[in-house]
Structure formats: C-alpha cells, structure tokens
Image (cartoon, rainbow, N blue to C red; front, side, top):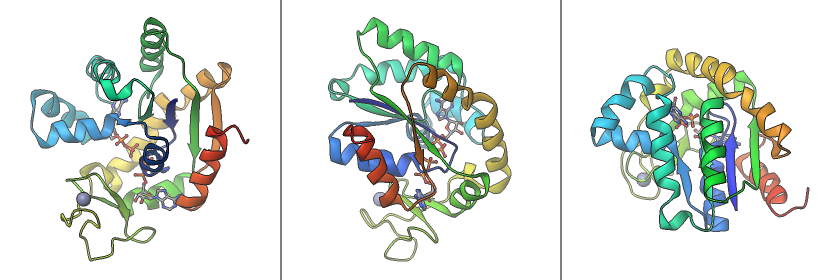
Length: 216
Ligand code: ADP
Ligand code: ADP
Ligand code: ZN
C-alpha cells in the first residue's frame, strides 16, 4: 500500500501516519522528520535545510526530491509506505510521478486531511514533541502523562522552532499557495480521498481505515 498524506500543517498528518504505520506495517516517510534529524545532527544537508525550515519556507526541490528518491528505494519500502509531507508543490508531485513510473509503482490513495485555519493554529502552537523518538503531543489535546516528559522514552519534550506563531502564519500561506494546488492534481487522477481532520485523533483514524479497507 502506497499512500500520500496531504493537509495543512497541524492537520494531524504525523499523528495519523504513526497509527497507519503501526496497523498496516508500512514505514512512515516524513520529509519534515528527515530534515529535523539532519538539522539535529548538523549535517551539511541539515544546515542548509535549517535556513528554510526555521522560516517556514519549503526546502529547495533538488534537496527534497533527492532525499525522497533515495529513501523510497530502501528495503523497508518494498511493500509500501506512507508519504507524510511530500509532495508539497507541483514540481515535487511531477517528480514523484516520474519516479513511480520508472519503478512501475502506483499510488493507492492520497488522503487529504482537512482542518480550518483556527484549528490548525491552536494545534501547532500547543504541539510538543519528543526529539528522541518523534512522539507527538499537545498541551491540551494529548498531554504527556508526566509533565513535559515523553511517555515512551522519558526524554524532555520540546516545542519545534517553526511552531511559534510568527512562523506558523507563513507556513499556512506556503501551504495555500504551493501545496493546495496538489489537491486538484490528485483529484483529477482519481486518487484523492477527503478526511475530516476536525474530529478526535481516534475518529480520524477510523475514517482513514475505512478508506484503506475499501469500506467507503
Ligand atoms: P507539518 O507536519 O507541521 O506540516 P513538516 O514536519 O511536514 O511540518 O515540515 C516541517 C518543515 O520541513 C516544512 O515547513 C518545510 O520547511 C520542510 N519540509 C518538509 N517537507 C518538505 C517538502 N516536501 N518540501 C520542502 N520542504 C519540506
Ligand atoms: P501535522 O503532521 O499535520 O503537522 P500533527 O500530527 O503533528 O500534525 O498534529 C499537530 C498537533 O495537533 C499535535 O500537537 C497533535 O497532538 C495534535 N493533533 C493531531 N490530530 C489531532 C486531532 N484529531 N484532534 C486534536 N489534536 C490533534
Ligand atoms: Zn520519546
């Protein structure tokens, strides 16, 4: 099963990708997580990405497409994968279409997780995450069991630099201008499935499973 998750920042893509990955045993390929790892390790690619990520702009396509092309050829992607956060503009979508064609692969679904601006802003500003294991929390919606410590690995939780309100506004604009056109692109290919992201995490996951299992 090969899936793409699209939706504005904060819609819940990462949270759902984790649940899908566990239930269907396919890896979650998150470009944002790959950039954050490289930034944390201060690799040359990470240092370059940081200039864009911290402003809420897209990392240049040559870097991003190359990264994804390599990742999708790894062994664990043989039986499918979830693309969370890629593609994010038409150039990336065209590049992915070409890559898939050259590998004789097709996509099963593009899940569009939708949410209003007000809702995503409150989700992003309340988001906290674990820099060690990547677990995602929310101050009000999904608080950790112990104050600001990860439930899985006890690491201190952090707020992402790009989740501060100034950057969030730019990320939303970038989404509308560069990523939203992809909805039409995938709708025309008959792949787009709309998911109401304004429900609880569990309810959104039920809707996704129904789509993946052909029940709606
Ligand atoms: P969110 O899940 O909140 O939408 P991500 O973790 O997907 O955020 O992305 C964080 C940042 O990483 C983006 O704002 C952007 O700077 C960079 N990024 C992630 N994916 C891509 C991509 N496909 N193309 C360019 N930049 C990307
Ligand atoms: P994205 O990857 O699309 O940026 P995340 O999955 O990281 O989104 O979720 C953004 C924030 O909103 C996180 O703090 C997460 O805990 C919270 N969240 C995600 N989905 C929901 C939901 N359905 N209801 C309430 N809070 C949610
Ligand atoms: Zn952790």
